[in-house]
Amino acid sequence: MKLQITGVIATIFLMNNVSASDGEELYGQLCASCHTPNASVKIAPPIFAVVDHVRQAYPQRDDFISQVVEWVDEPKAEVALMPGAIRKFNLMPKLGYSQSDVEKIAAYLFDKNTVLSKEYLEHKKKGHGSN
Ligand code: HEC
Image (cartoon, rainbow, N blue to C red; front, side, top):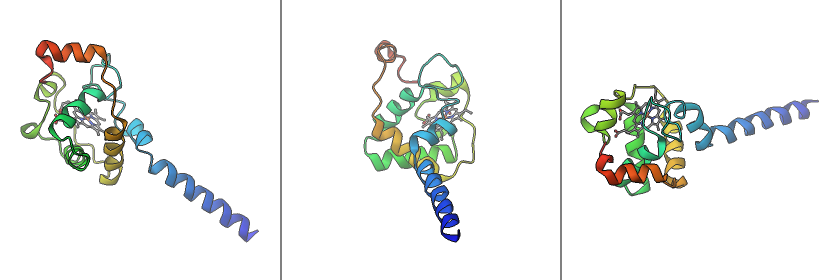
């Protein structure tokens, strides 16, 4: 009996651990409501545009991750890489997420190496990519 309970607790612990370390799932819970994967929702820039901008400025994985963590911790217009997006959507709110969650999300976003959509590449070519 005691062994069984320990087993259940261990399973719950493991399950929690798996989901908590899953950057994709955390991204879905914490970021995707605003940063959708497509450009049809007009709350925030789509996630591939965000990743593209941050990656261009911070091509190294570690730098990319610290930049995203720093940004989410405290979005500041003065250091924004997407000033055009602030004009369009307003500054991203301070959300109070835990740093370790955001680190996992940032690593996931970097590693995923999102393929940019054709529409977005067109948009960039027309010179609107600076926002
Ligand atoms: C409540 C809506 C909302 C949520 C939730 C949200 N964001 Fe944002 N985010 C925005 C908006 C709006 C912008 C564009 C304006 C700006 O840059 O502040 C933005 C911009 C950004 C930028 C670009 C910053 C720059 O340099 O200009 C990054 C990076 C970013 N978000 C990451 C994230 C991550 C990672 C999460 C999840 C942990 C997240 N956001 C959750 C609304 C949101």
